[in-house]
Length: 78
Image 1 (cartoon, rainbow, N blue to C red):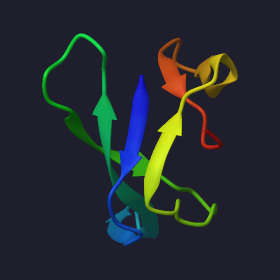
Image 2: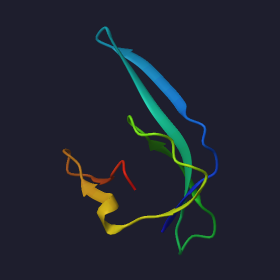
Image 3: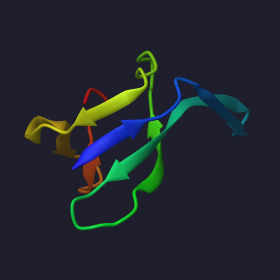
């Protein structure tokens, strides 16, 4: 499984809830799976981390965790 970053552009997504403002920083990415002919597009949440450089990234086993809701999650640091 590989992640492709094709642009260093960071997208800011903001909203308000209960009088508080929230802003998310995201970067567009592609997931390449060995059993799929075409990659899948997804948004990579950056948090406070800098944007990833354009290129391909391999996922290490430590890249995954179970979040507080019991779901499989991708850690912020690949």
